Structure formats: structure tokens, C-alpha cells
Amino acid sequence: MDEAKQQHMGLVALFWVLFCAGLLVQVFAPRLKVEHNAFVMSAPVAAQTKEIHPMELVARARRMQLLSGLLTLGGAVGLAIQYREALFGRRLG
Amino acid sequence: MRGFAHAAGLALAVVVATLTLAVVVHAGQTITTPNAFFSSYSLAPGANSSPIEPVTNKSNFLMCAQTASGFRGVGQVALLRVPSTLLVWTGIESPAGAGITSGSSGTAGTHIVWCDFSHTVDIRVDTPDKFLVHNGNATLTATGNVTLIW
Image 1: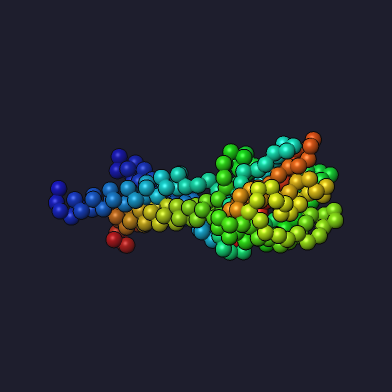
Image 2: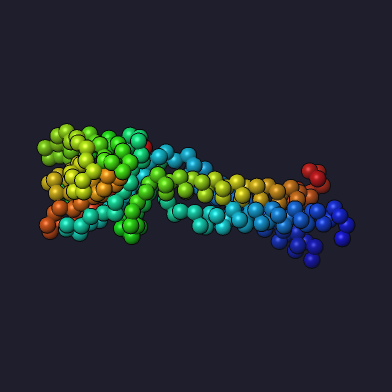
């Protein structure tokens, strides 16, 4: 395998890892619903929670969503660039 | 075979694009939502909700609404949490007979604001750093919600 091909495969693997990491962060992010411009905690969840810290919950959800969005978008854009010829043909290559 | 691989590649690209769009839209919604927290409660007679911790050294706007038929009501207070010391508040009690409520306390059980029409469900001090919803009704389950804006 030549060096360029190796580099290409390395970048593809990196972008897949970034993309999957973004999805994983999304899965493990706090499950706070947003309704009517407010973060919502349902009665059963609130009842099971020993203490409710809204500011910490919201800040954590925002941090994780930002991280998830950046990783997923970064990974997807990177993959699109790496596979640009296959996806868009040689015009953009 | 080459055509099949191309189609599979395009299908994978569509899946990646769809997942990316879903994640980015959800992230954007979470990041741009204002600092408002809405929590529902359903409390048996005499029960307390989980304690809720307001933001420190900043004005919190706290609203509560009792939604059970026959006892509906709504109350509101502006609230300050002085960490490890006390809660300070001023606002308006729920009807019937709505009046001003104001005070400062770190003592558990101190009344802050009524949430229902019959003045049996209230928000009260839990600790110097937290408040909770208490159902003081002897027979009825209290259902409603609390909204905190900071």
C-alpha cells in the first residue's frame, strides 16, 4: 500500500471514530426533553431523583450536546471529504 | 458488483447524513433553549417532592401551578439563594385570597408560596440551599408543576 493510500485510510478511520464518538456522547447525554422553550423533567423522573439541580443538569446537557454535535458533524464532514469522489464524482475531486 | 458497492456507499452516506442532521438539530435546540426548567409533581397526601436547588447569588423566578381539577391555582416568587445560608424570596400567593409572600429563611418547613386554590400545597424551604413542594392536604393527591427560570 502506498503512503497516500495509507494516509487516506488513516484519516477515514479517524473520521469514523469521531463520528461514532459523537453518537456515543449523544446516547449518554442527559435525557432532558425540551418543550415550550424549557427543559422538562417528568413527574416519574423527578420522583426518582434524590435531589434536583437544574443548573447543573442543563449545563451538563448543553456541554454534552455541543461535544456530540461537533464530533458528529466533524466526523461526517471529514468522511464526506475523504469519499468526495465516490459521493460527488470527479467534478469536486 | 461495482454498482452494488456504489449503491451501498450512497445508502451509508444517507444514513450518516441523517444521523448527523438529527444530532446537530438536537444539539442546537439544547444549546439555544433559555435557562428554564420545568418539573412536574404528583404527591400523595403529606408527601414532599425531591428537593430542588436554585442558582446561587442570582435571581431565580419560580412559578408553581396546581393542575388538579377543583384545586387549581398558581403562585410565583422571585428567589435568591445565598449559598449555605438561606433563601430570600418575594412574590404573590395563589388564589384564593392571593397576597404578597416574602421572607428569608434557611429553616426546613418555612412556607414560601402557595400553589393551589385551597392553600394546602406549597413550596417551602428544605435546606438553606434547596426548596421542595409539600402536599399538606390530608386526603388528596397533589398534581402540578414547578417552573424555574434563571
